[in-house]
Length: 66
Image (cartoon, rainbow, N blue to C red; front, side, top):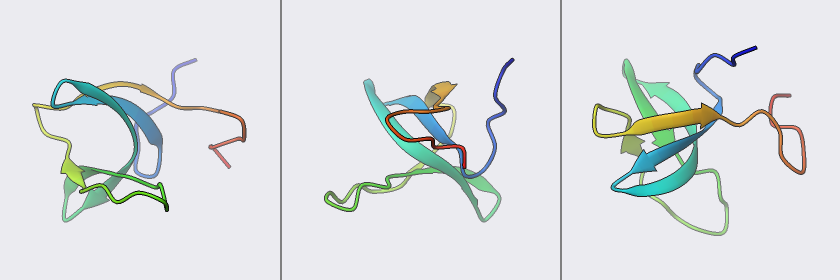
């Protein structure tokens, strides 16, 4: 079964040649990758054609799908 890439999902993506784990959200009709790490500050990234989403995180040490 394949998980849909919808707003609110945590995804693994390639941004500027490196892997990131971010939450995919829709802002003003555009997909944006936002960090959810309270200890670090990362700028939001618009998920355009330069960003490659590799997959959706379904679970980790804790369940991320709620």
